[in-house]
Image (cartoon, rainbow, N blue to C red; front, side, top):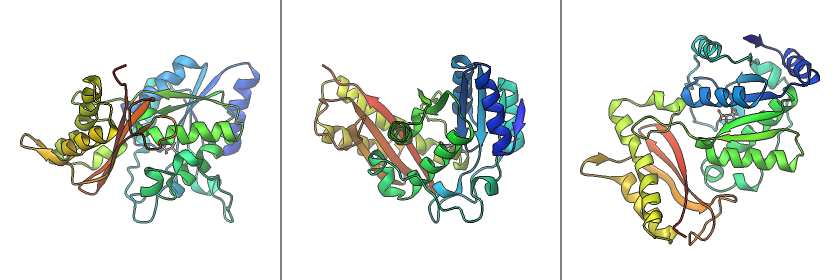
Length: 287
Ligand code: PAF
């Protein structure tokens, strides 16, 4: 596996493969890799001739008081996982090469970034669009792979690519879950064993919303109420400590919906202890 540390090396690596007529799939990550990330690399290998992962903990997407300093950094472990899975290359830029002194150009997030995470983490998506746009400049790949676990991020990146005419195909990949339903996340490492049980309330709430929709409930308010009950917990199942949002919204715009008359997605953000978790599920209604 080639380790590319400067933007120049990385661009040259990708352009060389593109000139040879190869497709190149990029998997942007912030490291602390888990099976969800590795599945993105597997998909990149399956779809493309060449796969390249990036590891960069992007400071501009963390707000004041968020977990930038304690975000897990496990480079040696990440490199051996990528090597084992057969990634062709990894891009490991320094902070100075991405944000040199005097850096002041940002990519504004599109409208779909405004609700939900946009309210709770006001500068987050501006940091995401800026870094992802920069990565797409540095690595002129044919395809980029993102998980549906960060559903709003995926929609933000799809909109950015459309709005800025970036010549790359975004491939969305399903969320990878533990057997008990917990969505894989680098932040799960922060949870102790009791908190890990509390965290299951998120996937349970999403399942309950889908079960109600399957049984014929169409009012999103009722689905949201049921999700909140599940997140609050009950006798056998502890709940989360604080819910930031638990909504069923339009799956494309992420704007409120009253009735399941369009493709919908249920999205949750909640705290377990100090750890902020997000999860989501597309909701299919009984026709
Ligand atoms: O999803 C992530 O890990 C990050 O937001 C991303 C896309 C790598 C940008 O830093």
